Image (tube, rainbow, N blue to C red; front, side, top):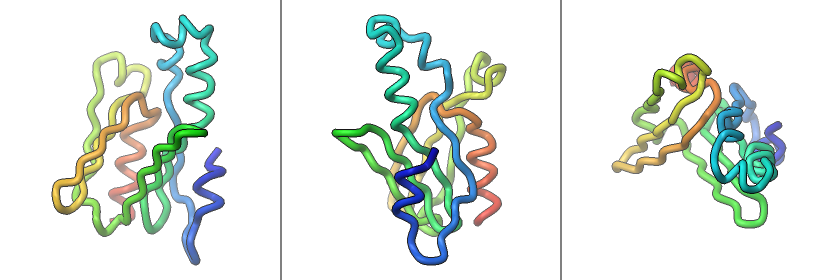
Length: 122
């Protein structure tokens, strides 16, 4: 995991924490209609990485959606979990940057550990 992030690290940058989409994505209508191929590809092609300098989130293969933000530009990382999310350890992560930038990522595995890794670096 983390092939995109590992290829695009800058000088003296190291990966601190990595996670991926949770297996709950296999239990959606989209996954059932595509015989789980869509969920497999989505999970395989998504990366959620915290380095010692920035957060890197990459989704997609042909049409990529890449979010990168320096840790110094992030005001907070919020986690939202449902009851089932708490039991199965998944949830939504919202990254709020300086100037009001807000990005939300759904169905992330280990969202509390993601936030903790960010907080330990700041």
